[in-house]
Image (cartoon, rainbow, N blue to C red):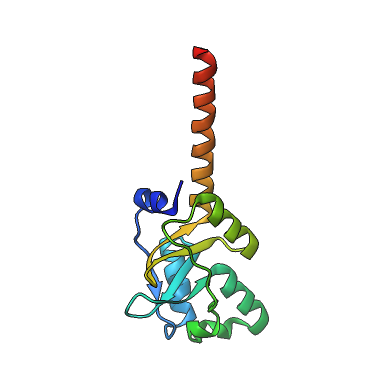
Length: 143
């Protein structure tokens, strides 16, 4: 199973913000859309960073609520791990687990084309495991 298949099912719509937007704007978008992260991209779709709920909470704990009026560039994760459509579910699980993050932008030719979450990956793994179990049951029943 590939990232391409995940995006084909869930869609590739991605909410983005620019690095000069404010943190409170990002927080409002996260809450409104009930999502955990926003990709920070420029007008050409080039990924510049990612801002997650965890980033915001960590900075509020360290710097106080005044951080909400700051630019996203001050709190975003700039060194973003990305994947391509050709990555497998197992590969992205490993990337996410090693990096200890829950959202992974997908790019093609250096441009953002989607985002997958750990929830998307887990859902695929469960479906794959269920399919394999069904195939084994069918094989046993017909043997």
